[in-house]
Image 1 (cartoon, rainbow, N blue to C red):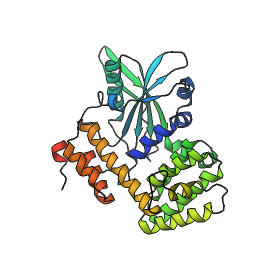
Image 2: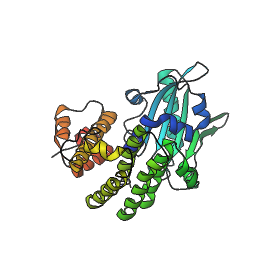
Image 3: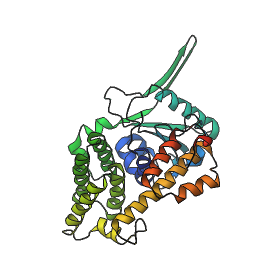
Image 4: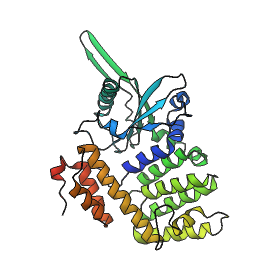
Length: 320
């Protein structure tokens, strides 16, 4: 059963915004080998060439990223972020297939990395092998188990790395589950921490958006949370979060904070629905695109997002 919270899209956005920080925390040897003076390229369309339709849109996030190494060679990096929160017996085999397909399509070696965000301490796949008479194939890949990072929560909380906040937000979202009051307390704790560790304004705003995404709240508790933010920021020299929301800079808000936040969520969900359909099935019919872009209900868009992830084909993606 798929978890109801939308972890996939926040993780993908997190890698786009904070790739360097995440690599530094998750895979230090690989991070040190990359030439960060050259801008990494996210190959979303190219990824479709190596992900089969049967696998596309399942309970994981894949990113194919083109980077340059310090030794001067050009290599593609395939980052596989596991967000399904439970072991998958086919995980290692899937990474093996993707690695082979990418090398076959692009003619370049691929560095395969896996981030395991599940809660099973014993599930730690790190290789895939085939052993037959006269033949042996072994494929090893690097793994970061988030449980290992959160085991030292004090170090994470003290870290100024944006990646540390992302890991903490993902972890507390798991821990809180459907306990809305606990989600409120943990969300407020993480938000206050953004100021206390001395992050830059831009990082505070982006990380707040990701925390807000991962730890969504019922409307009543969301109102309480916003009030806590207002009261806290009233004491700050630079009230980053409330000022950006009040003036509508981040999400085009013009008629009040709550309306603007909901408008931004609607726009993001519309985009997520269409991106999933495009990634899985290619071209999306204009009629479907228009219907999705016309929808204003968050609940309806969330249902369509789940349908886009699970439907077998575009014909099954029926809209009222």
